[in-house]
Image (cartoon, rainbow, N blue to C red; front, top):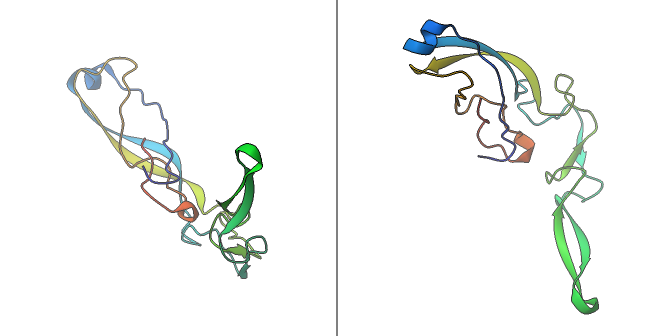
Length: 141
């Protein structure tokens, strides 16, 4: 899976004939989709250089090793998430999250002979990945 991919869990109730013979059903799923207004960036108007990392996307931290030896480590900037820039204003539709909830119709193929409690996985029909976290594939349903 790519960074930020998250699964979605949903329950589907089927009749006995579908359980026995198999078939297809449409399931309405509420899931996080990439915001179409900002293309997943979370940005509104007014982008500035991040005041914490000064545009580098990383911050330095000192970590103590054995016997009073110190080591410097780069960490992803907590303010900008490694992008190097901050927003003066966030996207009004997703409030800077890069994703928002949408209802999607997903076709579910039910194999013949499924039993009560069977879990089916539909790859790539879960939540959209966070674009600001590097993108990747959507999670599974």
